[in-house]
Image (cartoon, rainbow, N blue to C red):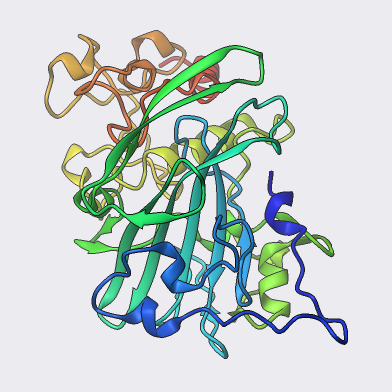
Length: 351
């Protein structure tokens, strides 16, 4: 589905229609959010399918699971501005940088490019005072997206890759929930665009290219080494990659935005960010901070060789509020992700 964006190219031939108005940087940086997504001019069409000049598509090696929703990611940088490379954490983005992420479902995942319904487009805007998170919800006609600061719920139905009908009570987050997941040292920050999670190929219209190399070549990124010298997050769904690297990448993407020493679940002592190497902090043989139904009467977060004795697996499998993890952003169990983590734990040498 990345081809939906990657194949779009600007018209540059003599006699072509005048270029549409540029992205409205003034609106992006305004103190008051725009009531409609179209006010920012990030797209040149009402349906949000055609990105404007200055937007670059990107993908993450291992993204957050969101009830099987497809996500179309774009980066906008003000003219003449670039992000600065960081080996650790999110890239250093300039004021005016905007991360655009649209959540969508095809009617049938066996035909992923057909009848694609957009649900919401989220913006993370880097302003002078820091990052701002906004969610714009698309109407049924797919002609307009409006700001929903209080969030909302949407009924979604689709046919999965196996031909099974699936129904989702999809939740668009409110602003407080955005802040909870994106909080780092009590400050709202992006999660995904780290150098290591961008260090992979993207199918651009002109051909596949490593994203770090592509951004550097276009002047969108400064200070980056060659991709081979940069850190890299494994692809969780690539069986050619090592099992442990895939499992750790999955936990990093789906859990570490809260479970790291600088985020909201720091008091749990369970740190699942990719940089963590201490077994106890990864949950090995570690009891829960607060026992209760969330622990499922299990004793440790991660029991090597025994996935069914691991609280981590129990909470990933659950869809019960107050038990399931992550607690926000999903209503379904991610069967494939759960299978990966179970296999990783099962192959760990028992202690």
